[in-house]
Length: 131
Image (spheres, rainbow, N blue to C red):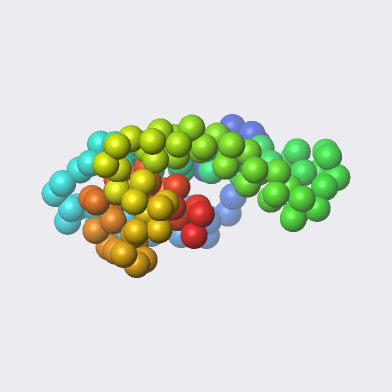
């Protein structure tokens, strides 16, 4: 919201009320979690920041380039895959990596709720994008 305000966009009171409810709900849910994985937190923060910047800048670029939504999505997904590839390769290349076993087809089924602890936050983000 702050970035949109800096770019000159204004929102109604309803938007701010809904955002306040969402922030309150997330804060309440987070208050019950006593453990914090800093790597997971930083990955989530970076992902959120990147998605926000993409959303703010892509609308104007799509209009300037006169491309369809599907074409724009293809370009953005390709860029995301290219930027994520080095991290994916480094995880797969590390010996004994659970992600390496998953890529080889030995996952043992779908990702379980504890996948974040077993595979690590980066792997979950990468596998979610592939799934």
